Amino acid sequence: MGKLKTNKAAKKRYSLTATGKVKRTKSNRRHLLANKTRRQKKSGKIQNAYADKTVVEGIKKLMPYGN
Image (cartoon, rainbow, N blue to C red):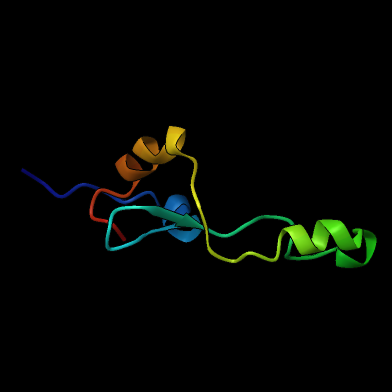
């Protein structure tokens, strides 16, 4: 049986913790920050948020080896 391929887009967006949780980075913090309100910028400040339980199974299928 051959190796399974990791989805590269998922690999860049998510990472798995040792306990199996899926970590992600919050959005809206990359560019165009001058046009965003303080509230928008502050809400995206959390770098290590966890993915919603409803999408975890799909993300784990995209990353079969937990990259």
